[in-house]
Length: 289
Image 1 (cartoon, rainbow, N blue to C red):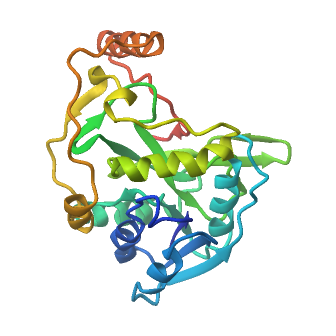
Image 2 (tube, rainbow, N blue to C red):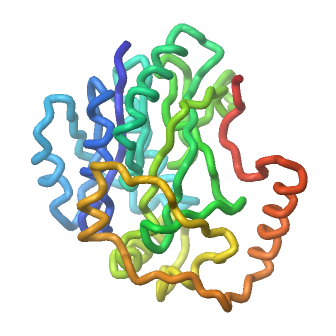
Image 3 (cartoon, rainbow, N blue to C red):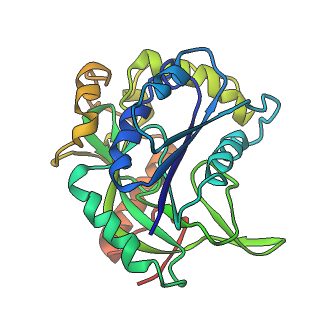
């Protein structure tokens, strides 16, 4: 079994992505790791070249600045890296996503278990979405609690978005992949970067959604405390130093937060989940049991 990791990145240093930590966390279970690195304004390329691993394969790219439709430029860069993978499985990690060393064997065993089962086209992960500081995770229904990150590399797959995959059974119609659960987690740290890096990110990426960058004043204004929970686990070894030096630490949930109409709807969805015993969050895969 051959496993290809892949990602894309641009201005990763400037925007506060722990992309090196992300790659290093996955290297032990990958035979190769493909990175599409866009021409940018910082030393991201040099930092990538400093990673001492024969598994790393860097592809230098140029982003289409005219592509401003719903973030599709992210999908383009994701596909450049994906389509250069040569493994049986292609393992996609975004630049702020990290694996825990205690779960690497579980992930590898899951890939091996389903290697010869064509009904399993992907492996999905449970998510820890950290928010504000590394001490909190967000568990609301607005986002995704699970997502496929490993995709079989022998099927016709398209990425209409940086987040998910679409399997093309026919040339004009696609569907979400059939996925088994990997039994492991993705640790997602994008919303704990420093306030200055978050503002810089918004300044630079809003254009790809055809929007003007909004002012990012605080994490408190971006989330409903009703959706936050204390994180009670341990962080991956690969990210711990970054959490000490680069992560935001000043966030405190606002007990007097007044929810927006949208947040009120999501509160009701979470209450409904408790009543029905169902998960009503977004799914970009069909579960294979």
